[in-house]
Image (cartoon, rainbow, N blue to C red; front, side, top):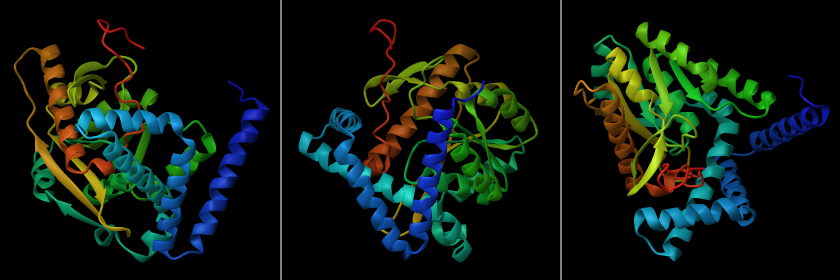
Amino acid sequence: MKVPMAKRLYHFAEFAFLRLVQGILALMPLRAGLAVGRGLGLLARVFDHKHRRYAEENAARALGISAQEARALIRQVYKNIGANAAEDLMLGRILRKKSIAELCTIEGREHLEAALAQGRGVLMLTGHFGNWELGGLVAAHLVGHVLAVARELGNPLLWEYTQRWRERAGLEVVGRRAAARRLVRHLKQGGKVLMLIDQNQRQGGVFVDFFGKLASTVPTPAKLALRYDVPVLMGYIRRVGYGSRHHLKIEPVEVIRSGNFEADVVANTARFTKKIEQFVREHPDQWFWLHRRWRKRPPSEGSK
């Protein structure tokens, strides 16, 4: 379908602005660039009334904290988002000076090695924690080549640009609409798949508990693990301190196999989601609270 000229001009302007910011950040020391990113994150918080209010309300409910504590938490979340964005724009320069091993410490590497030794491929599940873009690059560094699933960016110029530097690091990213067959083929060949499973599933989701409230969740990882007998690992990356140091935590998850496929899909999706909740509780400031995770409701409540 032909893209209207106005939209194409908007995409170009958006891409040009991003490259301009990237050029400015290239002139700064790393810590200064991250500080600028945090400042921009706080500025975004001032104007982003809708997402800020949603995030504060849900953090207060989910974590059982006061409104004041929730405001402080979400303020830190915006700062982290800004730092992550700045870091992503500086990653090319960072990786020319430092290796992935210098940027990120690994906890639970033995679980990954044990899963790989089975020779049946690996499903690596995570969420929008810390700098999740960097997390994908770390995963690719650890296992050689990773196929990741992501929602395509609305701006094709940005999508193509991000795809280039991801692929140079060994991270192959496919859009959700084209993912199903590619995932199956990749796993059958013993490949490694990375999926983010902590966002609202608009269609085809299963409802499982997340912080005491049902959340529509993608069932694909559970289906793949059950059908193709693939080991499952879960993990998250988080920033340590104010520089570009990170820590990746990896844990194995035992897949439930009762023989009832549909029930097992729900049970395993719930198990994966509970692990996501555990990670969020450990470092709540590192999770992307701005997403409307509980938007879709079960039919009994009235779904959107």
